[in-house]
Amino acid sequence: MKRKIIVLTEWFDEKQFYQLKQEAENNFSNAEEVSFLVWVNKSKELESLPKIEGVNYLTKKDYSFFGKLKNTAIKSMLKNDSSTGLVIALEKEKPFLKRILKNTSLKTMGIENDSSLKFDLSFSETTLKGGDFFKKLDKYLTKIQL
Image (cartoon, rainbow, N blue to C red; front, top):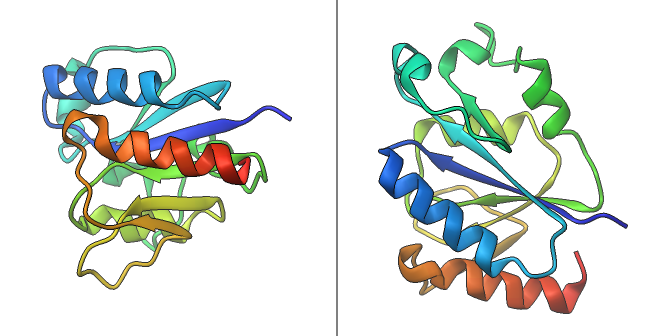
């Protein structure tokens, strides 16, 4: 069974994204494929972003007025698959996160915080800095054989 990890994050700048991407790819030893879903706050910014293999960008324009996902490529990415997990690489709840979680039935993994959002697998006392979150997550994913 091919194991796939989708990492959801927010775009801040190129340097920060590449660092997060490298930490994720280096620490997921048990996944055959690691892809990225990157939220971009300003849709005008989308044209200037680098085209990277395995990275899909998402903006509020990818959603209908009623909150349904219109982008078919991302919709197929988020469809239910027992060998795929959605890793939320965010330390704080963001407004777009509820939209994305509403449109997926994948297993979700993230950093526990004071928000009302609950993940299928959550970690407390960890951060994204230094790949700590990804190391802990990989350890558990190896044990539970996602």
